[in-house]
Picture 1 (spheres, chains in turn red, green, cyan):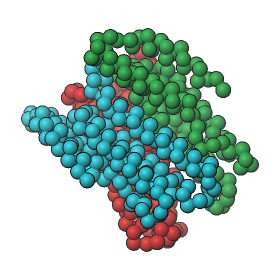
Picture 2: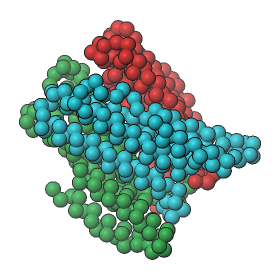
Picture 3: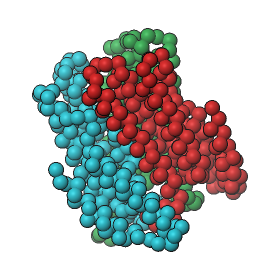
Picture 4: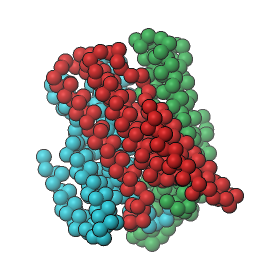
Length: 155
Length: 155
Length: 155
C-alpha cells in the first residue's frame, strides 16, 4: 500500500495496537491469577468472566471502529476507540476488586459503540445521497462529528 | 478514503452494521435473562451458550465476508452475509425455546460460510491466473457467483 | 477493487483462508467429541477450553496480521501468520492428548504476535517519520523484517 492509504488509517492502526496491548494485559492478568490461585477460586472465575465479556465484544468493536473511520472520518473514530479502551480498562479493573458486589454489569461501553455505529450509518447514508442525489454533506457531517466526539468524555 | 473505495465496500459495511445490531440484540437478551432469573438457571445457561457459539464464529464470518467482497465481488458476498445473519437469528431463537430438546446443534450457517470461503478461494486463484498467465476470468466468475447465490436460500 | 489493491493483500487473504479452515477443523473436532461423549466429560471440557482459548485470540491475531501486512510489508506478515497457525495447531493437538498433565499453558504464540505487533509499530513510526521529517526508511525496514522473520522458526 502506498502512503495515501496509510494516511487515512494510521490512527486506526494505532488504536488497534493499543487494544492489542490491552488484550495482552488482560491475558497476562488471567494467567497470573490462574497460576497463583486454584482454577476453581472465585477470583479466577471473576477475572476469566471479565476477560470473556471483553473478548466477546472485541470483534464488534474493531469492526465498528474501522468502518466508522474508513467510511466517515478518521480522527473521531480513533478518539472514540481510545475512550472505549479506557472504559474497558475501568470495567476490567472493577472485576479485579475483592468484593463481588462491586462487579459492573454485563455490558459496557454502550455509548461509545452507539456513537461509532451512528458514525458508520451516517457515512453510508451520505455516500448513498452523494451517489444518487448528487448532494454531498460529508464536510458538514465531519465537522459535526468532531464537535460531538468530546461528549463521549462526559461521565 | 475517497468515493471510489466506498463504492466497493458500502454493502459490506451495511451488512457489518446489521450484524452489530444483531450482536447488541443477543447481548441485551442475555442481560435481561441474567437479571430476571438466577444466573445458575437453565434458561440463562442456554442463552449464554448460544451467544457464545455465535460470538465464536463472528470473527471468522467477518473475515470471510470481507475477503470475499473485496477479492471477488461485493453483491453476492453481502447477500450471503445477510443470509448468514438470518440463519444465526433462527439459531438463537431456537435456543430461546423452552424445551432443551429443541436446541439446534453446535454449528450453524456451514453452507453460507462455505460459499463465502469458495468465493475467496476462487478470487485468489483468478488473481494469480491473471497475474502470471495473463488470462482474466473475473467477469465470468462474478456472473456465475451472482447466479449461484440465490441457491443459499434453499432450505 | 482493482488488481493493484489485490496485489498488496492476496497473501494475507490466503493466510486468513487457512485460519478459517483451521477454525472449522477445531469446531468439527469439538462437535464430534460432543456427540460421542457426554458433555460433562473431561475430554470435551478440555477440547472446548482449547477452542475457546484459540478463538479468544483469533480477532487479535487477524487485526495484528492485517495491520502489519498493510502498514509495512506483506510477505513477512503472511509468513508470521502461517507460523502462528502452526503453533496454534500444536497447541490444540496438545489439548487432545489423554493426560491432563500434558496440556500447555493458557497463552501461546506470544513470540509471533509480538513480532507482528512490532512490525505494525515500526510501520506506523516510519510513516510518521516520512510524513513529518521527510525521511523514509521503509525499504531498509522491509529488508530487516524479511531477514528477521525466519527467526520465528527457532524452537
